Length: 285
Image (cartoon, rainbow, N blue to C red; front, side, top):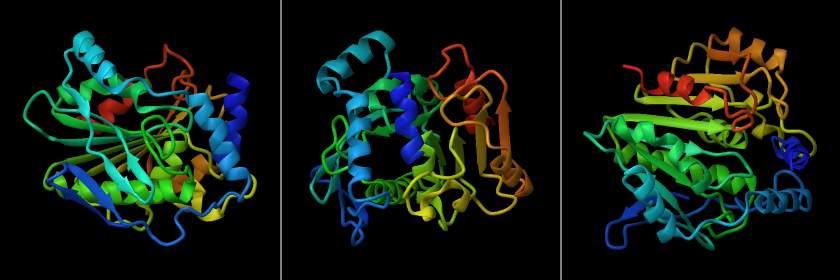
């Protein structure tokens, strides 16, 4: 399984939204051609098929919510559904347990589901943040076809909507692995206001093979001296090897970077304290 995950990641890491108060759903109009493949018309859907198979099936929603509430006392609920062209995106929300300070949107890796990792972010809910994690298109609870371009479009507009919903509060974004690739592209050329803080964890400089280079992280870096971003690199990462050239470019841009000698890829080593480090950056006073 570990070898399969490494092979899968090597390939790919290789519309507007509005809230409908009547149905408590989002609606979206996708940009033209957002369902087209940008990593090859055969290879991209095939690799996403393998990713989804590795992620497995989602847990029953009601049972997962009941079990999580019982085990953790967290206020977990279904997140608002997001209407897409061929169904809905679905996920979970951890509601803040005290006065709300803003939101955290987690963009997970390409073989993960929302119910795999939701409770790992309970500290944010306890610190006053609403936590959102959605399954990607055609993963877990969500409908649609998995395409890199359309997934990026989903998060680009989702961030715009959440920023408006939580206007004047803190906007926290965390992208790990494939999710970091998605998040960087979604934020490209976006006006990053003072309320946004972003962590990009374990991304390569480029997506290999036939993917459009406009999705490469190295081409979607934030502007020089951006103090809203932090990049996390695990020096023991066996899936995305440390890239000295990429790290050097981040340093030249004067962007904060943490190189941890103990951590590997996200969830590769249980003993790694990456989430404590990231939490300290995102919600430090």
